Amino acid sequence: MPDLESLYTLHAYGKLSKVRFAASQQAYDSRITLFATGTWDEKKNNVLTLWKLEEIPISLRNLVPFSYENKIIAKIDHNGDVRDMQFINDSSDTQPKCLQVHQGKLLRHTDFSACDPLSLSFLNSFKVRTFSENKSAAATGMAIRPFNTAPDSEIASVGEDGRLVLFKLTDQSHYRIV
Image 1 (spheres, rainbow, N blue to C red):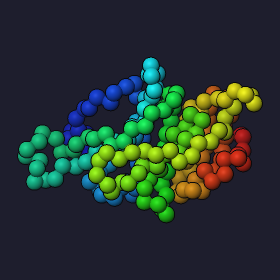
Image 2 (cartoon, rainbow, N blue to C red):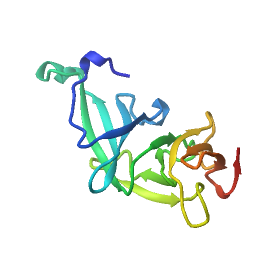
Image 3 (cartoon, rainbow, N blue to C red):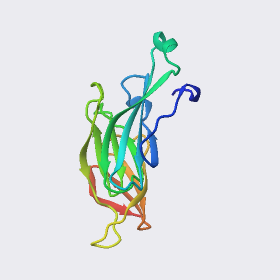
């Protein structure tokens, strides 16, 4: 992880609501750090953005004032506020996944080893929160059970309906309300 003295600011293009770092074992290259940001309260669409923080090679450091470079590598529009998101570690798949929860949306980075720009592709959507049969409730936070691997990741979600919902990515139809 880079030291803060070598970082610089970059306009994130919106009101940021969340930021999450990908676990270091998810990166192909130890010189690269991935993180995601989400926006809220935008007039049009909110955005989930994937960023790359890359260490500049030692041979070029005398040419630039910073040791690390920030790059936006993927963006996807999101209808509604980005309330929370997590990276999911999948040992069988080298492409890390990002789970964003409003009602529930699973996204995958396309080809992590390819040249920029990458994209986030939609994998799955699920609905686990409701006020009533016809009215959904927004999720406000989530956690993924540590050391689980997708697709069996166990997820806990809290939301505006006042419930704690526990479920697995592989089977959102069977969930437990605490």
